[in-house]
Length: 564
Image (cartoon, rainbow, N blue to C red; front, side, top):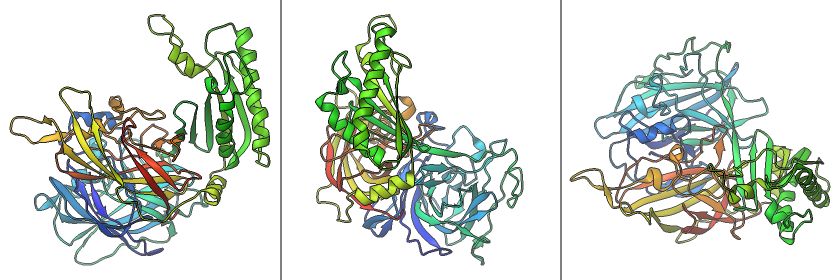
């Protein structure tokens, strides 16, 4: 894990400087800081990482702290086998079909006398050795349009970025670096920059034009050679991959409704068991609060046709299920129309009966699966979202706060409490929750306070952070996720003050969570910073941070305003 001193963006063309730690395989200890903070996500791994990281080759990464909030945080020390760097951003500039990021790297301290730069900036694609000695681990994020820009690649999966030395000696020398990304639309004037291996994330960096503003001098080393199959200045994109991924919002009420948004398209799923009595198409009293939430989502940026589709489970003939599902869809449309009066939307009601199940109606042995059938009894709404309008609506109606964090913004969490061999104890502190466009970044510090496992005779006891804090891609997330979601803190989620609305960690279109990745073993007593992105909470001034499993929580965390 890594830590850095946050950046203060000085304006277009100015140097934004940040100090942070990139760990070889362990994490960094964090203390208070005196300048605003900046958010990032990291997907850190080194050649010494354990096999448990292999499952994250295409999904693991973590977010760093936002530069838009959290005054009074300082850096104290780095613990363990860690490298600390100073990163200076020189510009983010349009360059033909690309945007080019130009920055400088200084090794400030290391476990030995050299930083292991070979693996500190590579993006942690463990199976792809051609990322070693590169700065492939940098991404751009648009928190308004909810896009993730990854570095350009050629047909050999080489990244269109500079190389870095295998190691960099501790000292004042600046090593220049650059990376190319697909250019965003001309309407996009700024992007977040995330060093995904544990480095910083700079919020709302302006996109400029013109030549690179790299410094020169006796203590400046030019960017290392790139292995890309064409020159650094080439504008030819033929045969290249220019990946731009959608970011997916996910919210819900823990059973009665859920919401996802990706690529300008929103989907809401309503539980038919909450909305209707058995075999009926009349809305229940409980449906009214659900529809009020649906209407809020549609009014704040909904556009085009709202397609409302009813579904049943597999019990009963189609001659009954299809008319029932259509009647339920029409009931939802009838109730919603007056609630969204004035919104630029039209409605369409469809009934599909038992088609398109989202869960098995029967178990593998052919027996009935009531839980699966309950998931299939649903009504879905699909509609376009104007993210700019949604953001304006959020800022107009949402309640944000610039108040300091309340005293005692922390909680103790016990993982694997039912396990015989393993019981890890953590202390979790919520530092800030910062709104950035349509997203929000939560900043945490987590300490392993005690553990029962050691890594061998004479070894120190360690917490299993890789599994203890992970969660499933559900609403709410379930603790201790399957193998594919290890090494993240996706078991942590947010709820509104009533506990009814749940905000799950944001993921990209590959289901990769924008949440801090962890190492498998944390020494007892070590504290680490964590960052994760959520859908920006609306119409609330504070939220509750729910720790994995939901039993431990931290209340009254204010939602503060960022730069986007």
